[in-house]
Amino acid sequence: MVDRDPASGIQRRVAGAHNVRMEGLYDLILRARGMSVFDVGCNRGMVGYEFANNGARLVHGCDSYDKGIETAREVFSDIRTVQSKFEIVDLSKGPDALRKAFGQGQYDLVLLLAIVHKLKRIMTDENLRALMVFLGRWATKYVAGHVKEDEFKLLDECMEQAGLVRIHTSFISEEGGPGLIWKRVK
Image (cartoon, rainbow, N blue to C red; front, top):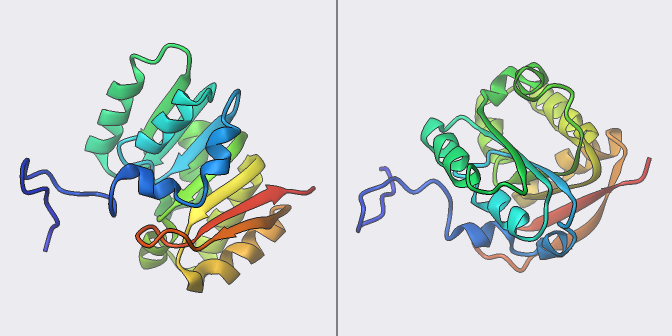
């Protein structure tokens, strides 16, 4: 069954409102000024928009949802103070798909908001781990995500391999899952 908004009939793509996706991670919004952000599974770009409104200088994102990417491009086309790029990417193709779309990207912050459990459905464990390590290496300061508790170990191992350690865990979100932040240490 597809979850649709009763008023518009448009398919819902995220649990709750987009701001729920940042529950437990708002400290990063406070540090957005001058930041470069990459949102994995960006949907319609609304989380990136929050970072842009709080001073991020660059917001990039990817998703397999073409209408969402089109919407994100439209929204950001009017924000002249932020460099933006949104691309349709099949993450099951791993790091090569991201390199093809974004080059050798380096970002202050990489967001993994409620995406890991979706990737687990379409990728082998080995390929998922390789992608997570790759994304961790793209982050020069932080990786943040809302993940299921059974994914903590996987992500902690991948982020450690990429040179990051978990510095924050929040269980405040009832819809988005626990919020985690890893910080670059080497």
